[in-house]
Image (tube, rainbow, N blue to C red):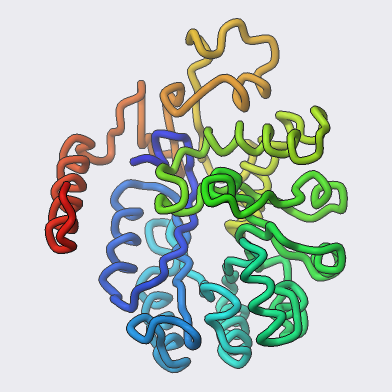
Amino acid sequence: VENIRSGATAVIDHQYIHTDPHNDDGVCRAAEETGVRFLLARGWTDMGYHPAFMESPDQIMAEMARLHATWQGRANGRIRVEFAPLIPWGCSDETMQRTYAQGKAWGVGCMIHIAETRKEVEMNLELRGLRHVEWLASLGTLGPDVQLVHSVWLDDHELDLLVVHGGVVVHCPVANMYLASGMARIPEMRRRGITVALATDGPGSNNNQDMLEVLKTTALSGKVSTLDAMALLPEDVIWMACRGGSQAFGQPEFIGSLEVGKKADVVLVDLDTPFAMPVHRVPSALVYNVNSGSVDTVIVDGAILMRDKEVLVVDEKAVLAEARAACARLFERAGIAG
């Protein structure tokens, strides 16, 4: 519901820290029922992590094969699945190569969180003697089909490798500021021709899934981190959200822009509001003025998911009540006062 209300028509969900197949099936089923375009990035870790959440390589491959057989291409192609190694220090070299090769065979991409903090980079240097992008390149698991979430602490050599091999940097500015992780070198990446997409990260490191908030934060953080008010223009931010997002999603030929032959994924935004008026430039209004309350209509694959600011595909009040009750049960089990 949050994604629909903030105008996100295509969602990549990195599911991790679990080995329960019901979680994966549940989020795919929710995407199928609500009508969003959805890519399940099925997380895994096979070393250096909590024993309850680690899996053997064979377990990882078997569960991914099940998900691929069950969900890949469902709902007129709206739902897809891919491998998602969690973090470099939780993934062995051998399983990285094995899962990446299988993903290639299936024609799907790969998502991994890298270089979010300086400590994580130091850990990989101690473990392998390589920084994160160097490690991926050394394994042959770096390419245009790889989504590199965060990518905050990349050095010049790593940027050079991305230029050569490809890879989509997934920028999460709100989460990076929330956790005080640092800020990715987005203006420089764009100057080098590296593809950048935008994301919220999870609610545990953001508190919401509001993509319009991410747009404004991207622009402002890009300016203040470089002390250059022209470092990122509204058009740059919209490109990253739409065109960059379509490349991260692995379907730039189908989504990311309004063109003949592409999917009918459309968002209508109400600019006739106190927040936006007067509108001199639409791109500026979309990045700096509007908020999720300005999203009027959301269409995915030609189906209307929200019209006149009313979500049509689910009973929103019932969903909120269910979430509230689930939260209360979790608090009770954890012995935390609600």
